Image 1 (cartoon, rainbow, N blue to C red):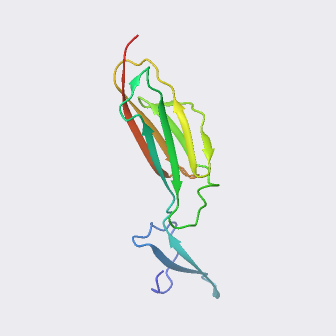
Image 2: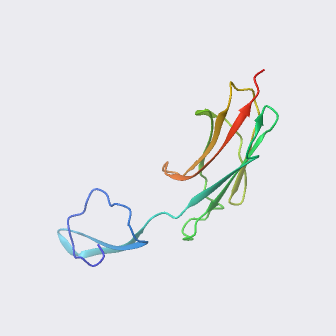
Length: 143
């Protein structure tokens, strides 16, 4: 790796500290079988925005917007499908997401809760890796 010669291949490679590593692999029994590739971290990320910032339930519905971006250009955020999850007080809540290009939107209906709670939106990739997260704290009136 990075012009240091050949070593036995590890079971996994750690994420590179710098942007790109040059990796060459070959079969131990065939020195002519060299294959080179670049190893770099996935740059795909999700910006999660939630409004209003200080919602009061049940009056205020929360609008959640997830904007995907890949500064490296390796993944098209307009075709990538993230795993999106909404949680209220730590419990998953089913929501219907709508997509337009690289932007996903949902509305989280206000409801009665037993006091203040955290409403969170998580975005993960197809392997379950973290892309982004957002939250608001809601104040709820009791019935």
